[in-house]
Length: 115
Image (cartoon, rainbow, N blue to C red; front, side, top):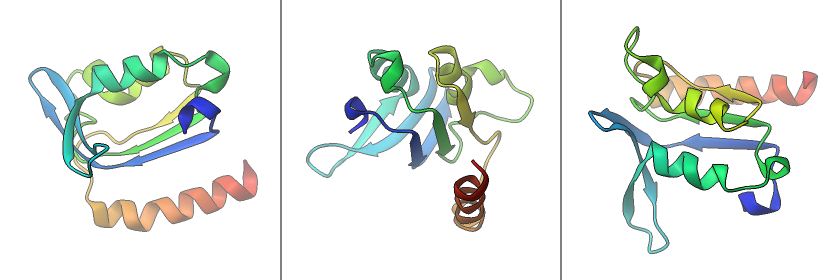
């Protein structure tokens, strides 16, 4: 639970960049798909005490990062930085889950090794 504090939050999910902003497709308490607006996700995180925010959030969420060269502040990553998350790794443009599958194990191995 994030309320208990976590150093790293790794969020891999489907997402889209809609006219209203990024939308994440997460699982609700009943195991059903829930469309969560990025602004709602960020608002819930912002309610945590600053000491409870993850120190790193890694996002791999398809298209919710935004399109290349198109209004990056609409994307989820910058919004997380605005609420005080010290480090955010987020993709810009589309990323395939195959690329995420190859990249993330190496990233986390190196992060664990070198900090």
